[in-house]
Length: 200
Image 1 (spheres, rainbow, N blue to C red):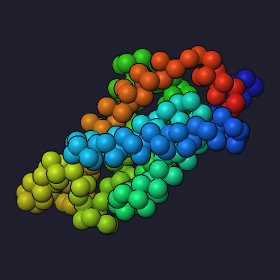
Image 2 (cartoon, helix red, strand yellow; image 1 turned 90 degrees about the vertical axis):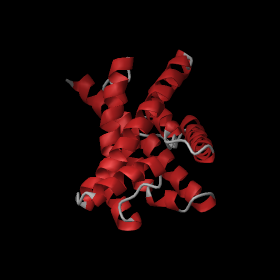
Image 3 (tube, rainbow, N blue to C red; image 1 turned 60 degrees about the horizontal axis):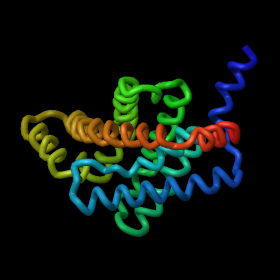
Image 4 (tube, rainbow, N blue to C red; image 1 turned 135 degrees about the vertical axis):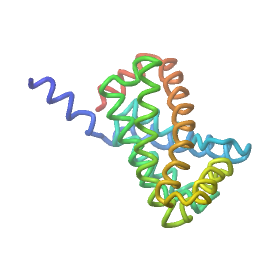
């Protein structure tokens, strides 16, 4: 019982060690480059949470949440002011990924898919009110917003239309990012993974 309690609480602990202090900027950099790449190529996904996923998987939900938050602020100040609004969404994603990973939901390809759906739901729930408040319910991704426009034209309430727009995009984005993170994580040396695990 005592061991289980230690494991359960340890995922929420974060030490500002050299390892963690190095990981967070690296995760922010991965997020930044991936998101800029997706926007530059007009991809139907954001990709801006890849570093957040990896930080959460390696060092826990707090490290992932911090990485996501910092990235949104920096990206918002440099390339797209819109990004800053969604810093709270990145915090939610970082926490969700860290918890799911700690519970073994990134241990197989099948479980990764389920995890991606859960993360997409969390992301959509947090983002939808922001979309409605700041952008009238749209996401900024053309094909997703076309779905929103069609639903509005058919007199479907803004909140439902906005959530549908966001959720469809989030499913695609989070499935892609989750499998990328899963593949990258499995390629990392076990020594590195144990290092971060012990550091928590």
